[in-house]
Length: 362
Image (cartoon, rainbow, N blue to C red):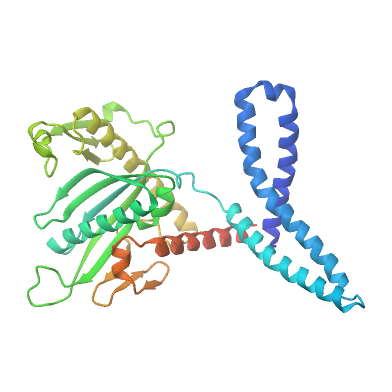
């Protein structure tokens, strides 16, 4: 076990002892809010300390078995070696578990998220690709049991989207999709191409954590301009006969959000305000990330929409994530929502980067 890990775990053992003492005090037990707060921390620290204590016991047992390897009885030596080998395997599993648990957690990872897809270079082909990306993410979300709800859309004549915003509701949505932000490039023969030539076009994707209402930044109503307009696109006769769509502009930053999917102006305003808040918070997050990146580089990138992060090469069936040099020749299944390998690879890379940063700072 690396020294910095052991130091952190020993501090956790000490903290668990402190928590056991605090939770046994009568005055704490009578203060329900304080009791619940300490109880939650106790559960979190215990989840870390218990596997560490199990690992310590394994090391103790292995040391004892090492001494038995000098025994004159071959049966005893064989049993000792079997115990050492079994303990080594279990020790590796426990160390990997502890390593994951020690990594700093992004508090937003558990949140719902807004997914924004915008067509870029490539004309009609880029709008069709935007529709393909929405379908890919929607299928991935369906497999995870997450709910996808369109917030606003600007359809293209060929059936794709110039721009589409969706809200994705589920446990751990942002943590799984946050690395999707950036430029997505597609190489394929467009349906509008008559001579079979391969074209390159692009879309930008942004994934924003939905703010917690209790922790969201406070926006001064005087800083907002609210416009209503008649919704466009699908939605039935009712939605097209009323000025129910809402566009909100945050004047200090120029950030705009709109919603036209709901049936009432009130619900559209509330949803647009949530999107606006998420975009403002993402702007602040990006500025902090840019500042941090000046001090330490991260190959996963800041999620800036101008970054080219992916290439989808249809003629070769090739999917490439340029940030981690991941290439998969399973593009058809990926476009059907099979993103698990990609998401897990990006999460594993982030974990490795965090571990390296922790080790270098210790």
